[in-house]
Amino acid sequence: MFRNPFLKTPKIHLTHKAFGKIYEGQGVYCFLKDSRPIYIGKAVNLRSRLKSYLLNDLEPKTKAMVTSTDFVSYIRVGSDLEALLLEAELIRKYKPLYNVISKDDKHALYIRITNEKYPRILTSRKIDTDKFDTLTFFGPFPSSTNVKDVLRLLRKIFPYSDHKIGQKPCLLFQIGLCSPCPNLIESISNIKDKEILQKKYGNNIKMIIKILERKSGQVKNALIKRMSDLSKKQKYEAALEIREQLQKLDYISQNITQSESYLHNPNLLEDIHQKEVKELIKFIYKKSKLKIKADRIECFDVAHLSGLSPTASMVTFIKGEESKEYYRHLKIRYAKSADDLAAMNEVAEMRLKHLKDWGTPDLIIVDGGKGQVNVFESVFSKYNIQVVGLAKRFESLVIPTNSQLKAKFIMVRVPPGHALNLLQRIRNEAHRFARRYHHLLLKKELFS
Image 1 (cartoon, helix red, strand yellow):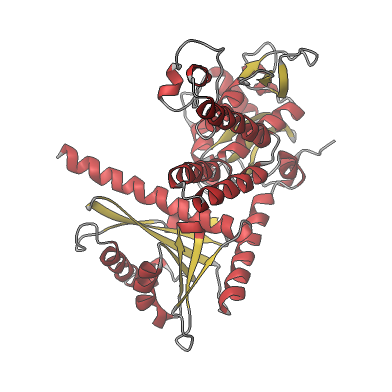
Image 2 (cartoon, rainbow, N blue to C red; image 1 turned 30 degrees about the vertical axis):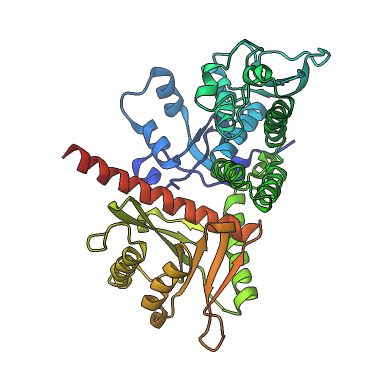
């Protein structure tokens, strides 16, 4: 029996001032009365979600819940998928009053995978374990919304079918959510081509099962091995497809942690982030003998579309945590169209002007290879600020070396683990933030 994990987390009063200091990332929150959960929810942005409960035009049921609450608390998690699974686990264990009231289901919902030639993934109110047509099932989940959200996320990475065999490819095949479609596979006369698609469909189902079993690490390792094998065989198009699956899986899971771990330690995410920073420092020293600090890490990324509206982003992580108050959008004004190195140089010079008012980083990560690193290194080396690059090819770290060495750069692939998780998390956040501003500028140009 787990003790209520929210007893170990800070208790926050329902005020604008208190909510204004809350973490902005994803997590699970809890309304507490007499130290007991009365409502548990999830949010992509905890601060924004909790602030919404302070509005004046709340529904009567929600207003009654807020009025009767003593405190609010929350548990931070590493990904959207972790938030979904942890919320379901906590609701199932504690059955909070207002979750029960708001539930519109007569029974809990299960994820059911059928035992057929082309296994289907379905949702079901009840599961008969003796039925021959059920391969496996997961649940029960207290919220039908949770189940559908989990499947929606997974289906974009590993498409699957939820329909019986028909005459022609289904509508979801056209948008890549049922691909390869069993209807299409059955219509193929060439035995070899048919077997290839059958194997692909079966692999998608296996991967989904492993993720639902909280074995996403095994899934990532299998995909990395397959991508490497395809590259060696010069099947680059198929390798690229696997790489896209890996990137999507990284985005939704990012080193997914079992719900029970959060129940034992609600501050687990902070512990993980501290370990990631230590591992990155240790990895860089092992490969280059450079002693660095990484309390404050900044990452820069340039975004443009064929040279149109070039922009850059600066994201800041302090002790492994996002610090959005130090994020900056940088508009590139002078670099020529699609000249990434000139754009990087302009960004580096802009950043240099703000060392006092924005703060000084310990480590700068640039999204790119030797050229991009060289640009930043030439600007920041005299200020004793270490610069490294993260090259997309095989997730390699580009580290400038001392001039006494023959090679000017060390380029080393970062193995799966805490250091790589941190690097990918920072790089992905820089991508997201750069694209957001770039799209905004593009819209302004189009509509003007």
